[in-house]
Amino acid sequence: MKTEYRTARPVGADTGHRTGHRLDLIAAAAGILLVTAAVLVGRSIQHSDGSLYVHWPPLLASWYPHTGPGTPAAVVVAAAVVAYGPPLADRIRRRALLPTAWAASLAWVLSLALIDGWGRGIAERLTTKHEYLQVIDRFQDIGAALRGFDDHILIGSPGNWPAHVAGHPPGATLTFVLLDRIGLGGGAWAGVWCIVVGSSAVPAALVTLRALADERLARRAAPFLVLAPVAVWTGTSADAYFTAVAAWSVALLALAATRSVRLPRAAAFASGLLYGLTCYLSYGLTLIAVLLLTVLVLTRTARPFPLVLLGALVVPAAFTLAGYNWWEGYRLLVERYYQGAGGLRPYSYWVWANLACTTIAAGLATVAGLRRAAAGAPGAPGAVRALRTGTTCASQRLILLTLMALLALLAADLSGMSKAETERIWQPFILWLLPAAALLPTGTRRGWLTAQAVVALLVNHLLWTGW
Image (cartoon, rainbow, N blue to C red):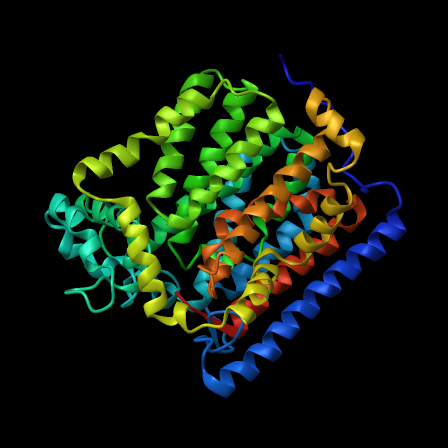
């Protein structure tokens, strides 16, 4: 049965403007209060016993006011997106939207990273003692390294892996090993890889919104996807690369499920293939399955599922045949997590302070958008009936997608396996919260985009962000 798509104005975009805008501002103010509380309480705890293991709670960062080569560029990019982003996104040719959004996202991420200079901002980020590039020489024999990977996860084991290598399946490290093998070794190439690939998550999200919601909502979301504060961490960590792989898995499934691509079966298989890779880049990103399931629910079809499942088995089968045991690796990771700072950081603080980190990374426009998403959530009997019959409007589909991403994020939060550093770790989930800003009224978009840019610029100029 073909799904019926209805184009509808974003919830609250043109009706109840004044009341809705006041509530948006209240939601943003609540976000500011949450961050303020996390800063004040966190400083008190850290000063008292040092148990948070961060220098500028709730972020893994240090106070370091500075400017750099990227400062003028970042200000110019932000001003250009605020001034011209909304009208350009509304009017640009359909084929030009995706490459333009990718280019703008890349410019924003690069300019923010270069505030810290080429070396400290990009080339040296993945070469520190915690990072993947520290162990490249231990993968001369890839098969032997994979077979013995789990033997080096625990602290105290012979030659135990650095924090990030131990904290992820070997797919993450193997990516940089393979880059090194093809002549793209070193921190500069690794940094560029993460930034270029990571920024492609923006067009992936737009592809998904086009397929599941409609063109208009995708265009409204585009400037907010580009100018997100989370770009501060997209330019400093391998999690940006993980985000893009997961995002394209969701996008390809959306294309396959709506049959809006020439080869839907190939898209379904590729979606599964990327999801399998996602699970071998980060243990926690198995939760991306929540978004994949949401796509199938919204499109009311299970047709792509067998091919997605088949594709999803390829990467696990390859690693298993090579001698790596994912389940054993995860079990040992949990033990390693509690051997280190994860076992000492208080859950009672981080279970809510993580959300303050997310507020900073997602920005106040996203908080206001999520307020509108919650107000328009498909919980009423009429909305549930619409879901069953496939007559949901575009904005309801966007709302469900963003709320399910929020649900996955909350599951990660409650697990206790994400205490601190979530501004970096949760990038793959934060990406899907950003489109909620498309629900904001047309006349307020520039104001909210300004707020997004200000948060990112303040964080990057006042703090030295970790990892």
